[in-house]
Image 1 (cartoon, rainbow, N blue to C red):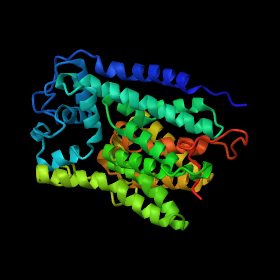
Image 2: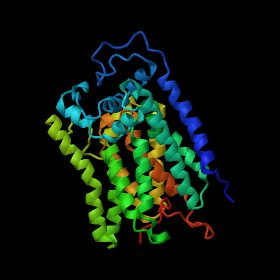
Image 3: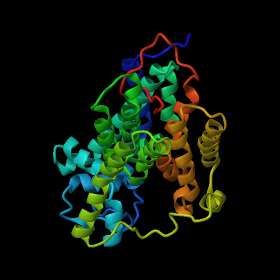
Image 4: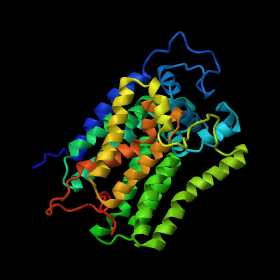
Length: 365
């Protein structure tokens, strides 16, 4: 019989490991050779004055921290690059808003609040995956693999919303598919709320509900509810983009060209020359595991649909996204997690074990 780690113990182990990964990235002293002012995309932490600000400036953490310090966008010019770049960077608002709450509205407390929020998000994601595995009769210790996912590592070392967003889509998928465990009229609404919140973390996370709802539509089940749910899921993100248009006078286009590739996986091929051995290892593990999951027909059909949708997304990513595992790993964190769920869950769950109504990830009928 598979041994399992109880949720509290799993959370403690995940928290200890997450802190060990995150702390070194945010406790280095401020280096003497800091680039000249104007080198960082956020003027708020340029130049950095502490180790935690140095860590934020290494990646997109500076963007979310900037939004957390200015949740109502009174100073959008803190993000350099003009209105289009500002709209692009502010289009994922939930993490900044949560950082503002976590910091108590104190700008000076924002950097560490963002680090704490990220660690908590990764730990919660591990626990959520562990609960799904336990419900389906798998070893919960496999959930610790999430900590080794490139997207989770990138979030812990740079700060980002992908772990929180992936947690939300995992919870949303569990709620949406829970009808097989018994009637729960609130489950679809809980799913919609989770999916909509995930879209405010990162717009590509909307692929998960899209794949799930498409599965229902193709099978001719709950079509009306699927259409209404799809509109409700997209509405908050669309409304925020329109609000940004009104505030900044620009759509979220950004100033970096080539983020999307028309030729499948052309961006990956172009980036290969600059990759390290770790880039190659992570890409082989993430993409290879996803292909295996589809080839083995692992997991319920809707789950394979989510994996397939993210492989299609991977095929369209441009060279700037494939430049480093810290970049594409964050985008493809849902692919990593749902592939793990598909491969780790036994084909037949133990009959004696009850299935929770919100995290079972049962196939939709």
